[in-house]
Length: 224
Image (cartoon, rainbow, N blue to C red; front, top):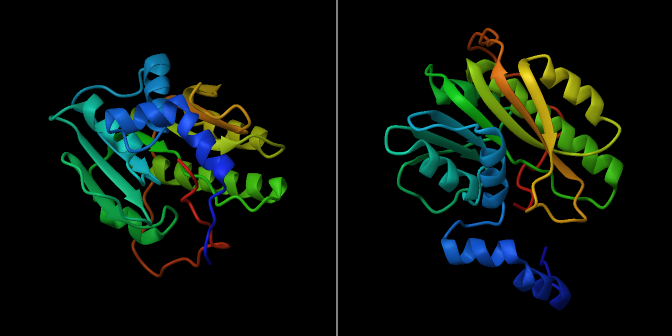
C-alpha cells in the first residue's frame, strides 16, 4: 500500500514546535519531550539504573533514558521495527507479549519499565482504544515479571471506557499511580500516561515451554 502525505499534514508537522525541537536536538522524535516531562514531574529515572523501553522505535525515549541513567546505567529497547543503532542502548527486535521475549531479556531485573506503544489507528475509536488498552496490559504484564520491587513504570493508553479497569489493575501493583498528559501530546490526541511508582513486587516468571498462542495481532508501532 502506498501512503500519501497530505500537504496540510506536512505543513502542520513543520510548524509543530516539539517536532522542530526534536530535529534540532537530535532526539529522533517529538515523543522524547513526553518522557522529559514525565521525568521532570515524577523523577522516574536515576543514574546507574537499568531501563526497559517497550515499543522503542524510532528511539526518542531510549535517547532520553540513556542520557538520564548515564554510562553506569543500561537501556534495553524492544520493538518489531529496527532503528539506527545508538551508543549505550541495546536493541532487541521483538514483540511485547511474545513469551520468548522474556527469556531473551535475561534474568537481570529492570529498575524502570517504559511503554509508549500505540496501535495503528483504524479510524474506529472504540477499536483503537481497546487495542491501546491491550498493548498497555501487555506492557504491564511484562513489567510485572522484570521490574524490581520499588521500581517505576510508565505506559501510554488512549482514554475511554476501558481505562478505569486498566487504572485499577496497574494501580494495585504500585504504591502510587498518577495519570497525566504531557504538553508535548497533541491537543487533539486522546492519549494519556499512567505512571506507577514504587512497584510492590514481581510475579513469578513462567517456566520456559510451549509458546502460548497470542491474541489478535496488534501493531505496537503507532506514531511517536
